[in-house]
Length: 475
Image 1 (cartoon, rainbow, N blue to C red):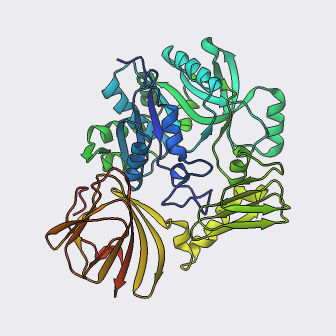
Image 2 (cartoon, helix red, strand yellow):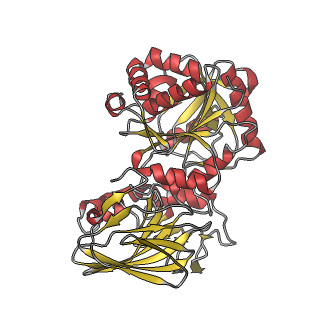
């Protein structure tokens, strides 16, 4: 039994709507877009008050397990559990599995708050008030969603029609409305009875599972079996694959909320965006006198109402209005802000070509259980990478059949094991690792270790890593 809310954060999405920053292997929830913290980290911070919240449960997929753990560690956020989905099965099976975990860990009286990991929210006093009203309604047995007060006739969101007033400032849900066209959205806003469907919930765990069993029994049964058959993998819990894959691929809205008589909504006027397009990012950003949102690595002249973001190179934009210019390390997107909902179309074109398909999948920076690797330069028989090893972490004891490596320490202290001997390497020092030599890299310090790695050889693929020992079960 607990009086604190159990946060359940959904962090498994693989969208590319913010390409070229977001990729299928680097989705937007883990990106630092207009802040020095990712959207996922900002979500963790919203549930960091231990007077109100238990440590969060994260639902994600296996590909993102290490970045979830590392980003939580970086903001000192304790976690109750990281629950790994073996396959994507929409929100109903994921939330049912999370609810069974909450039930087992916190008891039948637990209330869980379901949060997306990729939303931008002003978590001030209005947000807290809405959250507490939702908690009160959930304690009365209601399945509560948050309905955002519309600021425009948006066509990219679903809507909720308000029904009768309930206690605690909530309302019964009259009905859910699919994403409308512009005319229908304008007509709905004119009635002042419709709210945006935020996809956030406050749920009494037992009542939610009871309604799931009533209206989506197959989801309930397979999610329960997946939790009961779950296995531990380091600090993660892997849902049993066969049972979870057998669950229907259905959203929680369709599975439960559109059928139950317990659906309630808390009208919520705090600033909210799902950041589903570059236009949405521009709307939430801090604008200059000409209406531009511009990062430090960009300069604009005679430009108005535009979004100019760069992660690496410096951008210079002159004489353009109402555009988005987005640069990552390996690609640049230029388009009208009003067309940014259609970024997916150009991503599909890129994905169809062998020459550009990789630009839609992987980012130059990829995360490892011990840190991160960024590609700097590559050519025939060589590749240059930047390695970042977290404090206390080490790579596997390994060797390569086809390549040699040269490591140069840029920041921190490296403990190098090579051919059975160990020594320390300090900033501006380097070491050469011949082809076939057994070696390991360890960061024994308290700050991140950064190195430049130069690989040379006849074959530089990742499958030429022969792991002899590994703390992360990859041998």
